[in-house]
Amino acid sequence: MDTEKIISLKNVCMYFGGIKAIDDVTFDIDKGRLFGIIGPNGAGKTTIFNVITGMYIPTSGEIYYRDQQLNRLMPHTITGNGIARTFQNIRLFEDQTVLDNLKIANFSHTKYGLLDVFLQSRKFKQEEERIEETSMEILKFLKLERLANKRAGSLPYGEQRRVEIARALSCNPEVLLLDEPAAGMNPAEIRDLNQLILNIRDHYDLTIMVVEHQMRLVMEICEEILVLNFGKKLAIGQPEQLKTNPVVLEAYLGKTS
Amino acid sequence: MTQKKNKTNGKGTIFWQVAGVSVFALILVLVKELGLVSTSVLLILQYVGIYSILALGINIVNGYLGVFSLAHAGFMAIGAYVSATLSKYVFMNDWMFIISIFLGGIAALLVGILVAIPSFKTKGDYLAIITLGFSLIIQSVLQNANFVGASQGLNNIPKFTNIYWVFGCLGVAVILVDRFIHSKYGRSLKAIREDQTASMLVSVDVRRIKTIAFALSAFLIGVSGALISHLLGYTSPSAYGFTNIVDGLVMVYLGGMGSIIGSIFGSTAWQLIVQLLKNLGTWRWVVGGGLLVVVMIFLPKGVFGYMELKDIGHKVKGFFNGSKHREDQ
Image (cartoon, rainbow over the protein chains, first blue to last red):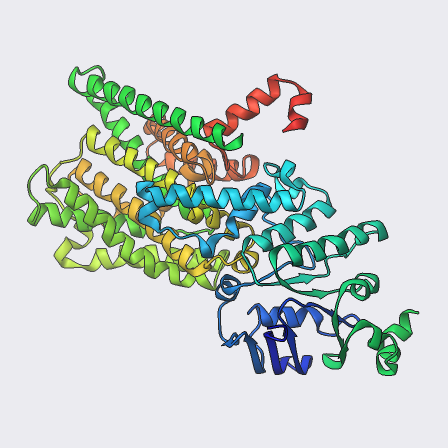
C-alpha cells in the first residue's frame, strides 16, 4: 500500500499563447507523501496547482487522481472529490466569520436539499450540527477556536494563512495543496508552520503538496521534491539528492547561495 | 457549552416567531375587519406588502449573490400575466387564487433559470445589460401579443388580492428566504459574492447556486406580480418598464443589500415617499431616480446593508457596554 499513486501527471503542458508555463511535465505522487515543488519565479509551480485543481484546462497531457482523469472536470467537482488547496495571495471570504469560512467549504459533502432547508427537516438540523462540530474541531486542531466568530478579514496575516489551511481541511480532502504557505513569515513562524504541516498530515492522513520559495521549509519537511525551471521538469528526488545535483545547483540553489 | 446555548436560542427564537406572527395577524384582523384605517391606507399597506416580496426577491440576486440584475421587471410581468390569465379563465374561484399565485411564481421561476445561464460567465455591467435586455424583451413581447391584450394589457382581472393574501405571502416569503440564507445555499451565495474563484475551489457548485438563486428570486418576484395584478384588477406592459426597474432597485438599495429587514424597510419607506409625493405627478419619478443616486453615494449598502435586526441589537449593546466588551467581541 505504501506505493499507491494518488496524483499522476503525464506529459502535461500548459501554454498561454506562446508562453510555455508548463512544458511536458510528468511525475507521480505516492499516497501520504509530503511533496514539494520548487523553482525560480515563473517556473510554473503555481500553474501546476492550477491545472490539478481545474482552474486551467491543460493544453495537452493527462492528470489523474487515483484512477480518475481530472482534465475536464470543474474545479468544484475536483475539490469535492478530495483535492483542496490554499492560495499564494490569501483568498478568504473576508466579510464572513472564520467559522462561516469553514462551513462554506463543507458544501459538497453536506447532504441536504432545498426541501430540507425550507421544511427545516431533521436531516437539515443534523447536518448543520455536524458541520458546526467538524468545523470547530478543525479550528481547535489549528488552535484557532477563539477566532471562530471574528470576521476573517480582520485577522492578522499569519492567522489568515492558518484559517485558509483550516478552510481547505473543511473540504474533507485526501490531498492538500499548499501554495507558498510560508510567504511573509519569519524563521520562527516557519518552524511552527513546518511542525503544523507535519501534524496535519499525520492527523488527517493526507497527501500534501507544497509550493514554496523558502528552501528551509521545503528541505526540512518534504520527502520528495520536484524542481521546475521555465516550466520544465529539472529534477525530482529526495532533498539530500537534490542538494548535490549539479543541474539543480546551477539553476536554482547556485543562484541563491 | 456553545451547543447548549444554541439550543436554548433556537427555542427562544421559535417562541418569538410564533408570538410575533400571532400579534401581527391580530393587528391585520383588527385593521381589516373593524375598519380601523381608511381604504386608501389599507391599499397602501397592501402595496407595502407586495413590494416587500418584490424587494426580497430582488435582494436574493442583487444583494446576497451580489450580481447586478435588472431582470425583475420581466419576472414580475410574467408572474402578473400568467396568474391573471389563469384566474380569468381557469381558476375562477376565490380560494383558487393560491393556485394562480403559485403558478405565476413557477412560470417566473422557469424563466429565471434561463436568465441565470448568462450569469455563469458574464458579470458586472455586461450582465446588467443582458438582464435589462431581458426585461425589455418581455415588455415588447407583451406589447405585441394580441392574446393578452397587446399594449392595452389585461382587464377585468378578478380582484382576489386582499390584505390577508398579501401578508400571508409575505410571511411565507420571509420564512423561505430566512431559511434559505441560513443554510449551505445562503452561505454559498455570500461566498460567491466575495470571491467566485475561491468558492469553486472550496467545492461550491457556482452554477448550481446561481441557478437556484435566480429561480428563487424570480419565484418571489413572480408572486409579487401576481398579487399586484389581482389587487388592481388590470395589468399592462407599461407597468413593467424602466419605472418598475428603478422602483425595485431603489427599494433594495435604500433598505439594504443582503438583508430581509432591509427589503421590508426599503419598500415601506419607498411607498411612503411615493404617497407623500403624489402631488408631484410625473416628477416623483425624478425624485425616485434622484434618491437612488443619493443612496448610492452616501449609503452604498443601504440602511440595513448586510445586517438584520439582531445584528443591530448586538452593535447597540456593544456600544453601550463600552469599549472593553467590543474588543472581546
